[in-house]
Image (cartoon, rainbow, N blue to C red; front, side, top):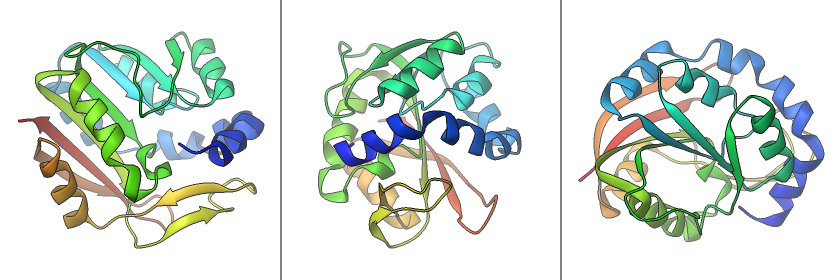
Length: 197
């Protein structure tokens, strides 16, 4: 995640947390349920933000560790009772095969497409064999800074098409096992579950 986007989240963490209440209150239960059924106990939440999705995962009985590049977001997720670590997505501070599953919801979209291979390689490195990877992205073709989506400061967004995501993840050693969409407002969110192949 680039510094401009990190600075936006550091400056607007509480505002962002409040703006996502409805999003997570109405999030598809099916996606959480399928992820929980397919994954083991130890889950790494990459780009956890304030931890609202981590709470939903924890409610299924998982042990969740949160990682975020924003210090302010790390503090919010700690307040929600999580072990939360400040780290860049490109250099995750964990050994190989550390986690049964990885949850990364609307965090990798803050990485330029030309650089997204780096965090994907890190994710597959820290996952156990046959680990499960939940990935949430927004459908579209745009890439660049956006000053909307609930915050009036710039954040980088890389939007994707479904076949583009499938090809990218296959290249990095993931097999698609489940897909569904979620459209809370004007944007369509693509919800993928992959397995480490």
